[in-house]
Amino acid sequence: MTYYSLHHEAPNATFREAVIKGLAPDKGLYFPESITPLPKSFWNDIANLSHEVIAYEAIRQFVSPDIPEAELKRIIQETLSFDFPVVDLNEQISTLELFHGPTMAFKDVGARFMARCLGYFNRNNNNEVTVLVATSGDTGGAVANGFLGVKGVNVVILYPSGKVSDIQEKQLTTLGQNIKALEVDGTFDDCQTMVKQAFLDENLTSKMALTSANSINVARWLPQMFYFMFAYKALHEKHENLVFSVPSGNFGNICAGMMAQQLGMPVEQFVASNNVNNVVTRYLLSQLYEPKPAIQTISNAMDVGAPSNFIRIQEIYKNNFEALKKYLSSYSFTDEETKSAMLEIYQKYNYVADPHGAVGYLGCKAYLKKHPKAHTVFLETAHPTKFLDVVEDVISDKQELPEQIKAVIDKKKKATSIASYEDLKTFLLT
Ligand SMILES: *Cc1c(COP(=O)(O)O)cnc(C)c1O
Image (tube, rainbow, N blue to C red; front, top):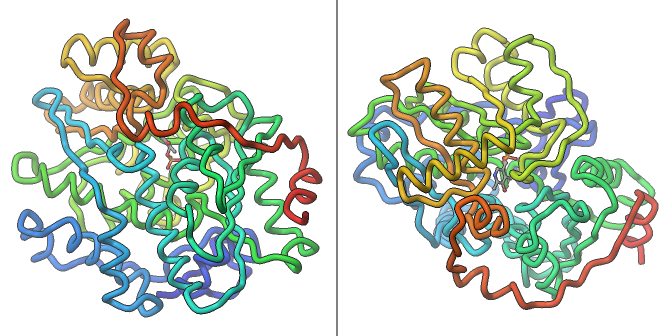
C-alpha cells in the first residue's frame, strides 16, 4: 500500500515509511491511496471467522508487501491476545468492552500492533529509534506497555501534569527500562504541540531517529478497525445495521470504524460522543470548524480541543459535508450528565461504566430518541477502575481492582518535569 500526505506536499510513502515517519514531512497525516472493500462473502460468513482471520483480512491490504504474511499473522495473534466481549444492557443498547488488554484501555490494540510492526522493521539494524508520544491519559500506558523491552526502541511519553488519573500516571511512569515519562506543566494540547514541534525540528531530527506513536501513526490507527468488526460479528445476525457510539477525543478510534465501513461493513451511523470539548458537535451543526483550547473534564482522555484525526474523517467522506452528515452524528455532554449516566447505568443495569463509556452511553440514548428502532453499541474504552475516584464517588460502591491495576498501584512514580519545548529538546539530546 502507498500512503499520501493529507497536505499533499510530501512524497508518497510505503507502509513501512509511514510507520517510521509517523507524520509526513509536510506535517500532513498519511492516508492510504486506495481502500478495497472485502468481498460480500466475507461479510456474510463473518460469524464463522476467528478474530485473527477477521483482523488479517481487514489489515493486510494496508501493510502489504512490507510485512510478510506469516509475520503479519504472528503480529495479529500477539496483538489480540485478550477478549472483546459485547454486553447487552437492554434491547437497544449494547457495550463493546475494549478494556481487557494489559493496560485496560482500547489503545492496547493499536499500541501492541504498532510496537510489533516497528520491532519487525528494526529487526536487523541497531539504529535506535525514539518513539515520542503525547498522552491525554491512556495512550501513554498503552504505548509504554506495548513497547516495553522492544529492542532498539526508546519511548518518551509526555503527559499533562495533574490531568491524568493516578492509575494512568502509574501505568506510564513506573515501567522503567526503555520507557521515560515527562510530566508537562500544561495541557494535553501543549504536549501534542511539543511533540509536533520536535518532529519538525531538523536540528533534532538530524541527530536522532524520531517517530510518533499517537493515533496519527497508521500502525496505531488502522488496527482499531478490528474490534468494530468483532462487534459486527457478534451482533449482525440479530441487528442488521448497527449504530456505533464512540467516546471521542482525537477521533482516531471512530475514524478506524469508518475505515471498517469502507471495507464494506454495514453501519447505520457513527455517533461521536463528546464531553464539553465538542468541536465536531459544533461543526456538524454549523459547518464551521473552530478548535478551542481543551477544557478539563472527568473523561480526560477526550479533553482534546483540536482532534488530529478529523482530517482523515473528512478525507474518507471525500470532503463532502452532506456525505459526512449522512453517517456521522455527534452529541456533547457535561460532567454532570456523565455522572448521572454512570449512576443510571449502575442502578438500571447493574453495570459499572467508566466516564468515557458513560459519555458513549449518553450518545446512544440521544441517537435512540430520534431513531427509536436502532440498535446502538457504545464502546467502553477503559476499565472503570482506571478512574477509581470518580467511579466510586458516583456509584457509592467500592470496586475490586483487576490484576493489571494492582500490579502498578504501589510502584514508585518516576518522571522528569518539563515546561517548554526547549526542556524537551534538552532532555532528548542528553
Ligand atoms: C483515547 C481515549 C478515548 C478517545 O479516543 P480517540 O481515538 O482519541 O478519539 C476515549 N476513551 C478513552 C478511555 C481513551 O483512552
